[in-house]
Image (tube, rainbow, N blue to C red):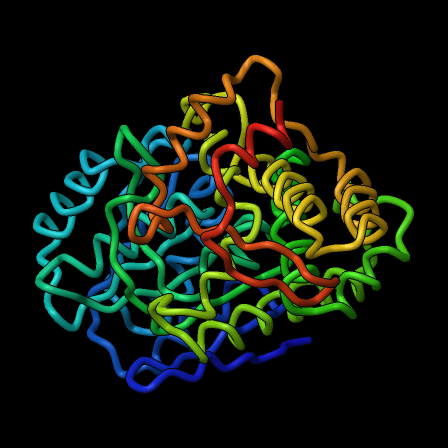
Length: 361
């Protein structure tokens, strides 16, 4: 079974393949792209141990010359230093302008590989093979690439679209449950901001905290509907001049929580879950959203086993100060994405620090 989702852009359109046929199809798909023969696969040791051989064999069988570069796992390695090491391999293996970097891994690997591809020789080909649920439904689609700065998440980066995205649902079998739950935060996000049907479909389930609790049909539905939602938004606003900002729902406060805990306490999806609950509270307080819909969102997030509250040990004034370093700050004002109803959100910069103190004190 294979679904193909098109990301339609003025200059850089591409396809997302959602398949259960396995990673062995990557060679044939890459061959159809009219790219050069040299490929550098970027991954981390654990993922490469599982899926490196099958990926490289498929590419070599299709006539490509393949080398690989491994980077340590974890958000704390999402740095310019790691990018420099990728450049070293690009130089070592003589990558050319028609060569390709392939990201084989989760969101961190995808973001860094994309940024390296965007900046090596002023831009070479780039393919995404996401191996985590979060990367499949979010990070691998849309062309956001980059690394963290000590003062904030993803402050250094570029918009750079992949040539294709290959999503193989089979690889989720080796994904730790915590990472699976983190990915479900982004899935719920799409339900709140864009796809009411997806939200209601998830509400029908008794539990969403493990891959084992999902039927194959539901998993395929989650992957295709989430990717379609992101493709719809990105196609309308590639470089976040307006609408695309809604994809940051839950991320404004979520990123702050990740940053203030030094990316050691919460994984990204956990921060997003807390951030969505916080955004819901703001929306209710400002009469944008009904209390009962905020309760529905919280119940759905609780089904995934994700955290829902800002930790008591984080200082509210530090949170407010950190919000000012967010990428979404415009003219000194923090932009929040707030829900109006299930399936629709709005963007506002009218949330004052005093209101935040009132809500979260």
